[in-house]
Length: 161
Image 1 (cartoon, one colour):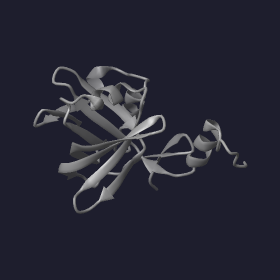
Image 2 (tube, rainbow, N blue to C red; image 1 turned 180 degrees about the vertical axis):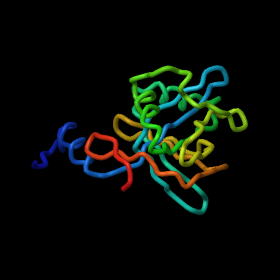
Image 3 (cartoon, rainbow, N blue to C red; image 1 turned 90 degrees about the vertical axis):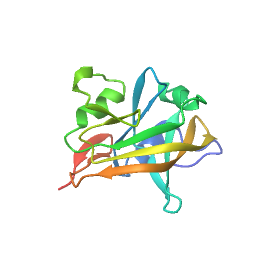
Image 4 (cartoon, rainbow, N blue to C red; image 1 turned 45 degrees about the vertical axis):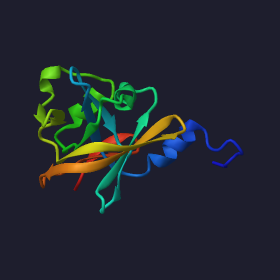
């Protein structure tokens, strides 16, 4: 692989970054009438004080349009457990039965039961970045368990151990 003035091709970039193991998250939000979720591995902590996180959302995603709405002030981030592979697939465009989605609400925001961690975030910033938007969230609430997370590496799911 060699860099060109145009940079790497999307396939080269995807293959290279696929060597970085990441957890799997589902970003959730609602417009007050419909709840949505989107699988995202592009999630990072940004700051401890104040508590900020960042998720990267493709401009073509339904979640992008939802988060761009002024009326949507909060979103959730659910870190999936090793037992929740089906949810990653469900929210990545391979939907399974909706009744298998363990929805619950925290102050009106949809979250997913059984996740290793859930964060409730107030939209803080939206930063256009190429074909994505980086949404920075101020974490207002979090809860977690000691369950094992679902991992994603080289285009496949993995578990710890």
